[in-house]
Image (cartoon, rainbow, N blue to C red; front, top):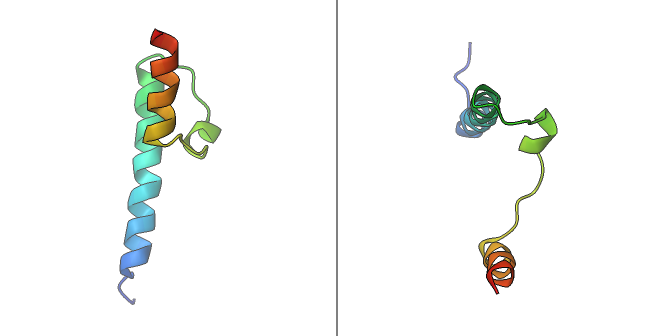
Length: 56
């Protein structure tokens, strides 16, 4: 059996991390779906802009 490549190991870790994060959200009582893990996140600048506008 050939050893897995580095890219395969990275993909496995990323998939496991997303799964564990989703499970921890469910355990804490947050409503989440598997699609939440696949959505794109805002950049740091976009988040700062959003929160700066809310505080004003």
